Amino acid sequence: MERSNTWAMSPVVRWQRLPVERKLHWLLRVGVIGCFIGDGAYGVLTKEAWVLYFGVVGIDRVWAYRLMPWIGVLDIAVSRLTLTQAVGGFEFVLAVAVLVVPLPGLLLSICLWKMATETLFMTSGALPCEWIERAGSYIAPLALYSLVVTRQCRH
Image (cartoon, rainbow, N blue to C red; front, side, top):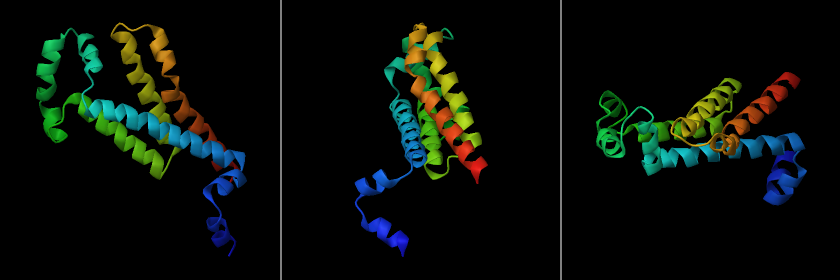
């Protein structure tokens, strides 16, 4: 009975009545999902700036675009996608996984993944401030991890 009354309230009233811990949980969860959907979209769209990452291993812009469709076995394994599209698709999958069930191990893995991928900015010649600017991409999953683990310890 009480549950049906809760759903009769407006979303704003329901949000206001949530405990702070639940609000933080959902804000962080949506933040993590947003980071991955945004990055995933750039990967699927083969963002030109990502060509710099090929440059890290000595591949120029022209060759980067020539090679993207020919990433061979990886392309076949992920339905003929380029490497950046595969990474983008992977980040979409991670976003959905966090939406469905934000498991602690998943969140820690996401944090490490984002720290590693955001480091690519520096390896392609960007200043360290680029990595710091993207801190939300790896701090949000870490904060959500802390919240989830704290909550599990209480129950």
